[in-house]
Length: 345
Image 1: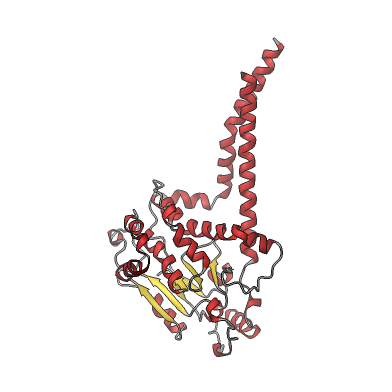
Image 2 (image 1 turned 180 degrees about the vertical axis):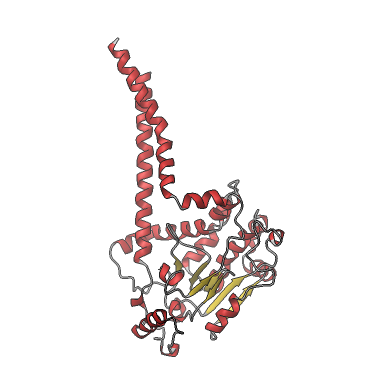
C-alpha cells in the first residue's frame, strides 16, 4: 500500500511539472510570436521614419506631409481613420471625494479627444456615453444585453462595449487616460494591432482593428463564457473583460492556425484581412510613442496591490509554483524512506 502511494505521488509530481513546463513553453512561443509581429520603422515610409527619429532626437515638432503617405490598394482591409473613446459619466462617482483612492476618470470629461482631433483633423472622433452604448447593443447585439446588464462591476460594461464598437465600426480605441501625441495615419496601414504588455500578453486600453476583424468577432462571442465571479474585483475584471481577456483571445487566435503559418516563416507583410500586429513599447509608451498616458486604474480595488506586487516580482510566482509541488516531493521521499526501512526489517 505504501509502495503504491509513493509511486502515485511521484507520478502526480511528474504530471504537475510536465504541465508547468508545457504552459511555460506555450507562453514563450506566444510571446515570441507577438514580438515577431512588431510594427517597426521598416513598416513606415523611409522619409517618415527619418522625420520621426529626428523630431524625437531634437525634441521638436514632427514635420511631415501625410498626404504623401502611400495610398492603400485595399482600404477595406485596413484600419479606418476613426478614434473611439468611451466615457460613462460618474462611472465611479463614489471615488470622486476619496483622498486615498480618487477616481482618475474625469468628472467633467477629458482633454484626450480634443488632443486627438488636433493631431488628426481628418479623423472621426467618437465619444460614446452609456446611453449611446446601450442603444448600439439594443439595435444590433441584443443577445448580449443580459450579460451586459448583469456585470458586477461598471468597468466591465466599458470593457465589453469597446470590443463591440470596434467590431461594428473598426478604428482605433483609446481609454480616456490615453491621448494622441501625433498623427495616427502611420498606424492605420494594417488590419489591426494590440500594444505589447509587459511582461506578458497585450493591453486593452488601446488597440485598433478594421471593421469586422475576426479577432473582434471572437471577442464579442466569448464574453458571455468569461463572465465569472472570481471573488476579488481586480481579478474578476482583469480576467472577464480586461487585459487578460484580450491577451487570451489574441492567444486563442494565434493558436487557431496562425502559429503554424508564422512559425513556418511566412512574411509579416501579408494581405490577410484578419492579420494582426503588435505595437511595441517604443511606439506605445516609450521613446517614439504616438500616445500620451495619464494615471489610470480607476477600477483597481484593494486586491490590486497584491497582484501588482507579484507582477513586479515574477520570481515570487516561480517560488510559489515550486512550493506547490514541494509537499508532494517531501511526502514521496518520506514514504520511500519508510518503505526502504520496512524492507530492511
